[in-house]
Image (cartoon, rainbow, N blue to C red; front, side):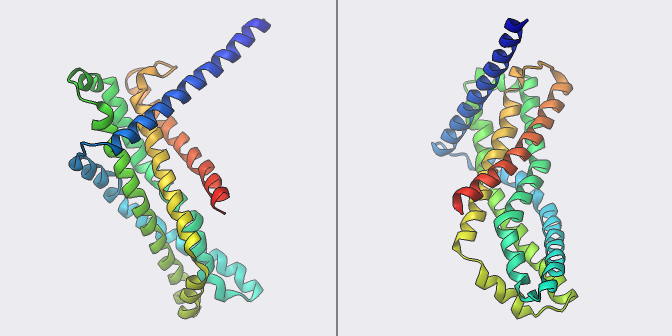
Length: 263
């Protein structure tokens, strides 16, 4: 019995290391295809429209209400200590350093990441990727590289939009609703935010973009190697759910790591 248990434990470890290595190779090859010519602009533009433009409305709505909630909570806390003048700084820093990149990534994962994983896994399930290989078309360059490029462009831009509308959502609550001085709100934000805060927000947006597209595309691309081995709609739904969960966890974990490195 001990030998069987030991073999099962080593089997799990070997399977984990195999999947980890396969995912690492997938990421390296995808980024290599992205960095080397030929460059195909039309697929990149189409993916920017899918990942970025179609996520714009939900980003604006989410950013506005997040900024309003942040301002509401900070106002309630700061008014107790007589520091209402710091409201703009608190809203700006929290959105720029933390909430903006993280919530943007989570929204994009839920809206675009799940669709990307499902699309690629369906192509694998219906042997369309195998057909590309038979026609001497590199599937990584044709399918994956444009999505990497689009994510690296779209997610930072969506993060900037989220932060901007969040700041004005906070302005709506702090200045218009509670009567905080507009100069105090905007001036405090201007004095508090520095270049390091901008670097942290931008770095997180880029890291989250790579993570979400890597996990979503990799899970769909290697559907046929899934240990559970379910095909059809069941397999597609399972790997899509796994991709969304893993991407969300990866974003939250990497958020701490990037903060710890840059601070």
